[in-house]
Amino acid sequence: MDTDKTCAESIAKQYAPKSASKLTALKKLDAKAKRPANVFAYSFGIASSLLLGVGMCLTMGVLGPGEGTLFVLGIVLGILGIAGASVNLVLYRWILETSKKKYAFEIMELAKEIAGE
Image 1: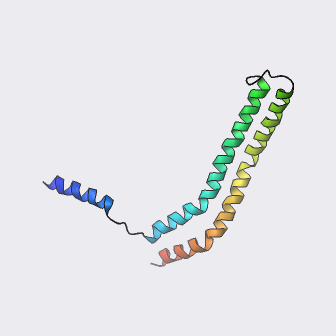
Image 2: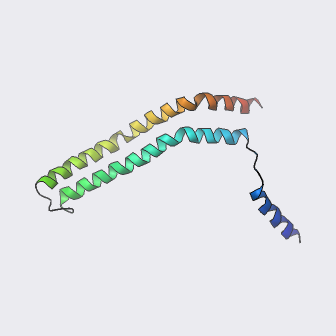
Image 3: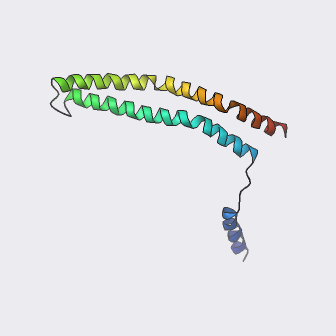
């Protein structure tokens, strides 16, 4: 009988409205500030590595005969992929810094409220 009551209470908790605490709001703001940089870094990194891979395949002859214009195109694509992967961290840090500046005031005010309690 007691287990039925415990089970019913745990299920009811899942559907009950949750009160938003200031700490939860602070964590959400922090995640919101970091999200654009993370999305860009993953997307740009994947695209750069795919570009490098296609360039390598063209150069080695896995895609196409591996001679002439495809060979040169493979080298160019590979260099572009390496350059993209090389600047990815720099661009990530720049976007992260810009985004943090955008939300800095809100985050600092909320952190001060939490620390003052």
